[in-house]
Image 1 (spheres, one colour):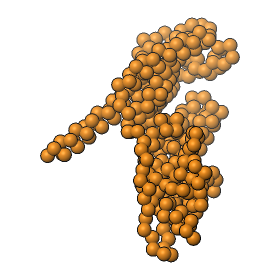
Image 2 (image 1 turned 135 degrees about the vertical axis):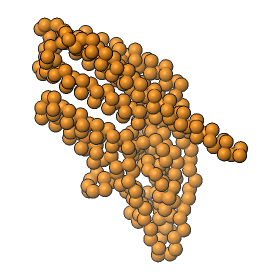
Image 3 (image 1 turned 180 degrees about the horizontal axis):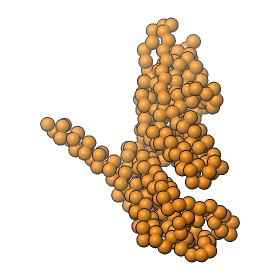
Image 4 (image 1 turned 180 degrees about the vertical axis):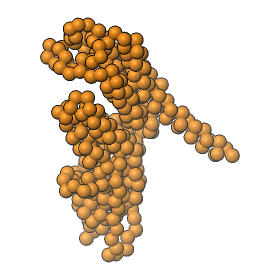
Length: 321
């Protein structure tokens, strides 16, 4: 009974922590969205039918949008970013502060566009951008204060045991799995959707960059990781390049351990740090390979203990001839 009670309490604590992290990460975008809608509702009858929505050199408008387009873009931008931040912030103070600052800047900028449209002729002087920057600084400060009360997702990373898999003489084995990163996939889809919105609002020229960037992100959102007689290999799974490989003769040992993306590698993607590098797509379990040159290489993926054990076995077999 004691064990069940303790387990239930720990599970409840983890759920509570997840709710707090999601709330603090997504709240600024929701607040900015609510403020922008309130400003739009208050000013709607005084705004022109077509809003100046984009400003070029000298703060002069060079594009327009209807009221519905303004609401749709504001909704997609702030709510979309809010969802992304809820998925990727994971209690990291730096990301939470960045999210609050970003939400403050975007929310203030969208409101300033509405206020600029109250005047004739419409212009967008630098002081309006400076106002948005000031709001971003204040919002970032609020995020920094709130982040102190958010529990971290993962315990500090620890060294994993060096395991092996028993293989009979002449027996071969392989291991393969996709190293999916759901936040990266969500980000890729969001960027493509943003491109589609830009296509509707501003035309093909504005849509090319986000659509291409989103498709590239989508292509690399689920890299394919294999362990076999060639060593550890990471690829897109369907493109011949880029490809990362750690040959068996460069493997000193492999372990499975938990990785905190921000604490251990300073972020996501292909990362370099003193004495280590890695493909870090999320926080969580990872294969960590100590190479014969003394450097570590890591890739975050589920099932890393089996992959590390097989890699140790194959590397030891090759070293022993």
